Length: 165
Image (cartoon, rainbow, N blue to C red; front, side, top):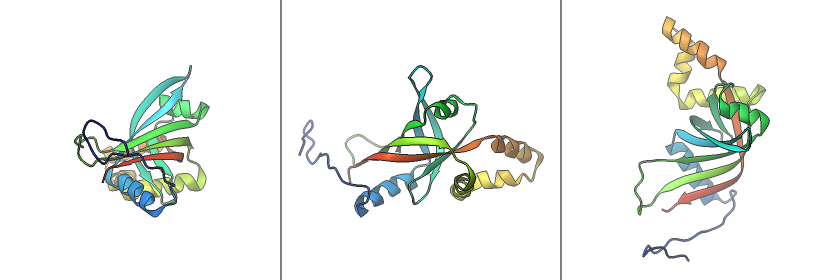
């Protein structure tokens, strides 16, 4: 057990994602948060970070919607390596905090993955689904812009969880 600056009980524990308590913790973190930060590798091996709303599947696929012309989308087309963090930023140091770091690959979602992403995203963010219906002129303009975006599918290979509770 590691002890840091008088804080007892801190320790690093390695477990597998197949263990039910680990899965429960991760899916609670995903459920409680709507935003993620994503790190990609841009041209010249330069780091790039972006923030996006995300949704997820029970199979641990994470999806986000993005402009295919954005730097992170262009970077992913060249190098699909990506890292993601998910956490609530209003947590207080010294209290039981939660968050996740995920490392894996990300590519534009196509075919059934894109349809699944759109369904999950619409369920998680009902205003997105309503905007796509485009009942007003402004909503139709917004829907047209959203339809020019693409869903991206992130599949983690390694997950690190901070769950101090």
